[in-house]
Amino acid sequence: MKIYISPSDQWSNKTVTGNTEANQCGKIARALSTILNRRGNITLVGDNSKEKTYRQRVVESNKFGSDLHICIHTNAGGGQGTLVLCSDKSKDNQYVKSVYESVAKLTPSKDKGIQTRSDLYEINATKAVCIYIEVDFHDNMESEKWIEANIDNIALAIADGITPPETVVTYKVQVGAFKDKENALKMQAKLKELGYEAIIKEER
Image 1: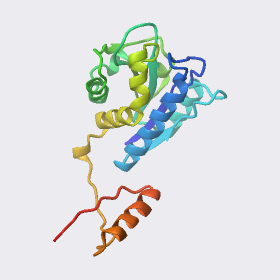
Image 2: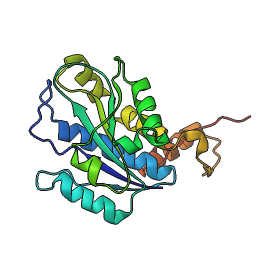
Image 3: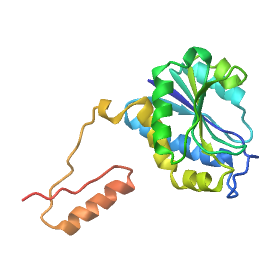
């Protein structure tokens, strides 16, 4: 599946902790891309720098031939909870529902459901199904601290809503067997430095 990830470019939206919406949504987007790629998807993360706009990301997403267009935002205006926005024609889409359910299950506060919007450019102009996620509220201290502490978990929840881990085929490679545990630990450390997951299994 081809998935375009469009993080918020709202650098002027300050969180209650002094962070910015764009900064933390960019982190979620990059973590999400890594997980989805590992699960066999093809992703493209849109540039959310101050020089770029959501309109440019829509053009890029359409040119990319996306199956899903994922917008990542955090909310403001008072309140708590996950909200997913989509077009009226996508409100019953399986991915819209499963992404919302996965993220809502993770967030600690009461959630706001799936709502349709006809006034948001990214929802209207993308050819792919657009899932516009408002993770939680960044102007609520409790919620914002939770967001900042759970960047990777939020990305994982979104990924699980798109490609559940049980549907992913994986191939495991054994690197070696060591009599000395210290050597095994050194090899594990080297593999982790290279970006690989590495576990040590003791066998007798």
